[in-house]
Length: 349
Ligand code: TXA
Ligand code: MG
Image (cartoon, rainbow, N blue to C red):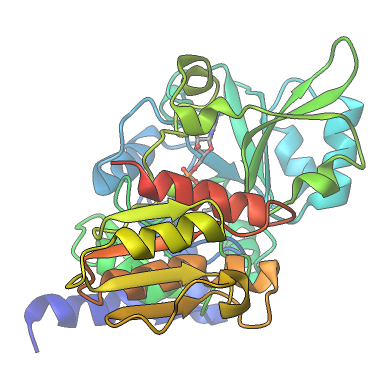
């Protein structure tokens, strides 16, 4: 056993009450703690402590201009950090919090510049995971936390992934192991627009499907996020086009015809991986091709289950020594939109 592996092991602790209390002390004293949320594991620090927050950027290798989400315990706490709380914010919060929704709101001076990359707005979210909630309550601090991966890499959905990404990071004091994250894709990031009528702009597709937001107000997706357009880059600097990337080249097949073509065009000697919702979704594509490994996100074709499996499956496939991963886009509805968004970003060179 190497020393590094030893250190990693003691870093990672089952998230029981005692461990959460210890983690809360780390947060209050300015150190970093990785913790589970219902979406992905976060790399947390006291959001009111600029030095602690700086360690997040260093540890991730993340550009300073890329703002962090601040995690709070409830609506009352969220209101302490924003100067504006319109009726629509209240409706969204009542409907989706605790849960995978981040609202970009005008911040108060309690949130230091470094958290938002100098932007006037802060991203606020009340996570649903019991460990995340308990940690925030025990630390009695708002917790700034990006996904606990190195910048540009696949978000971690298990404590093991955090260790693989950041196990050797000197400023990481503890990893709270709360098992696998259920939702599996990051929170939906929204901005509220007041005129001509109250409406919602989606800056990042995520764990709350559009269909559910649309029940409350008109929704516009800032699509250009995926296309690296400057307007979107300004709206949400973190939505860079390449993200969530495995080391293995990944291409997306938009439909079965494109999949059939990619399999046909591939060199005979290639070790190919096919990432798909399930075998049935692959239609007439030849899945018995020599050297093809098929990985299903949900054999029964459930998009919620598929979202939960996405990043873990990408990591597993990345370790298979494949020449290339071909990902078949999933149906563009419900969590399928967020899955396709992550696949597209993973495919950018
Ligand atoms: O589910 C999640 O959101 C996870 C868990 C840990 O909560 N967190 C997460 O954080 O995915 P991160 O840092 O990997 O992604 C945050 C996204 C980025 O795209 C960032 O640009 C956007 O939210 N964001 C955060 N604050 C913002 C702000 N003030 N204005 C615009 N966009 C913001
Ligand atoms: Mg991230």
